[in-house]
Length: 288
Image (cartoon, rainbow, N blue to C red; front, top):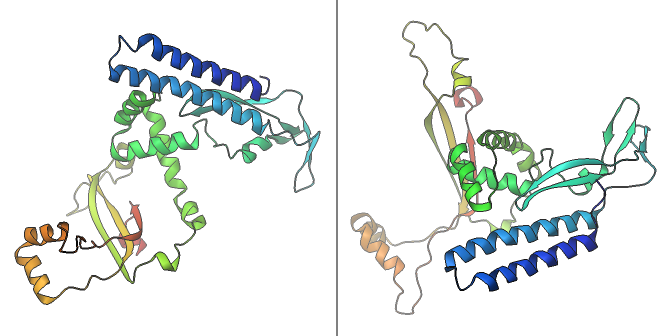
């Protein structure tokens, strides 16, 4: 497909905006606020898709000249036809044309992939982030239904599982590249906590379990999941009386904390600074 044009993307966006306000004008009398808000939202998604086309028009196709020199000295030649790839954004799907460089026996290289930081899969990083946020809280099937209801995007539940697994593979890389918090933002007390809970073994894992059990062994139905958290806080100095009252009358102590004092200033609650959460299915007896 030909490269996107900023002028055409702008025109398409202006048309969508005009259609949006014409829709509001024509249907305001007959629609309630809920229905109107729902329609406005989905029409705004179309405007966002036009804006994404404008982004790729401005970004270009990744054309860096007639040839591309690799670090090992290999010279790749620019192909006549662009190599298209699907890009599934939160606004909808679009096809992205990319300039391709090839040589005999060498895989094609599309510089736009690095220039725009495009994901390996067709799903945009923002869409993958939302898919992960949903699947952390709900099943993959429920997550698929939720996203379809919110954005009218139909994605099979199996894709949520694949994206979720691939995201977890980037855990070490993510924390290695993450900058540590500044000392000024840290509290003076380090707090570390963890807990273990048995989770049901999925079929793939159950197949690996020993078929014949030894004497005294029980068939494994769950696997221990370890969840931990680390953060810093500043100490909250309390008198012995305050500690005793908090133990004997916890509800009264909470009310006093939430109620402003004579100077109309609430007692400052303890707040965690720079929390970091981790989870693992590795056997702690083998990794400790």
